[in-house]
Length: 224
Image (tube, rainbow, N blue to C red):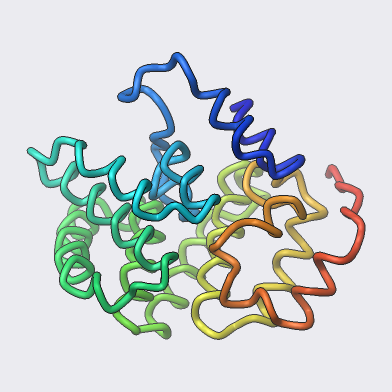
């Protein structure tokens, strides 16, 4: 979408917001995936996150119908993601437990094909402080969908793994993966402009390797 182009090329969130204008609220920003955290939160609500207007991002989800288990799970996941990025992990423990139960029920029906739900469950385990489980799940989902098999969705999984690594104390691994992603056609979610403003990278923002990455020129994309 044009909105993502504005964010990823120049970090221009106000212009990205304008690109969504005129599109009905129920038709915008909802990805069929939940692999990277902005997909889980929704691309439109994530514009508020990028501007660190976390309360506004939560309000987007207050009005969303939750009359089915899937709808309730989607709301829970979004709220968990937003509050985690706002630094309020302790406030979402109860919601994280609810989401875990719903995800485990879904995975029992759909696994092992439902890699997106696996990635979503990794974030729930991050919120619950179970980092080892979160990392294992994120790696398994990524390995099951390599970029050689699916260049687009495979890149989503790599970006999602880097995000999980950043939130589980694996800063060196996250930076290494980000360097790889910057040389790939992964600009939908990874670019230097976006790395500079996206709260998802706050846990590694002061890491020397991450700071060095931000100071460098955008590497040339290698198409294979």
